[in-house]
Image (cartoon, rainbow, N blue to C red):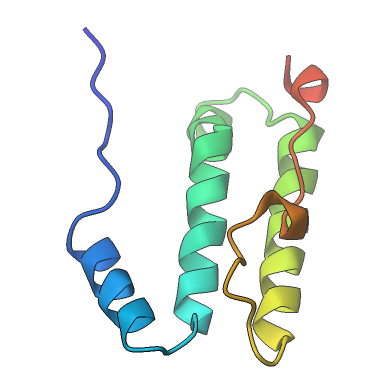
Length: 99
């Protein structure tokens, strides 16, 4: 049996309230999106395996560096685009490199 974490909850409710009030996204929203993308890629699982002695694929290390760079670049935009979650702003992990 597999369990999955349900994303959302109170933090996403606060985000909807902020959008309804007309305020744009903030830096912490960008950081949350970066963390979500890293988590969805399997990066954290690979880090845990690395602690157990299994080397992390270089593609994951490079992807984490790209995500961090993209998050920093998006945070520097003024104003931060409302569609910052779009895949246009974020790097994509090459599936062939992690197989």
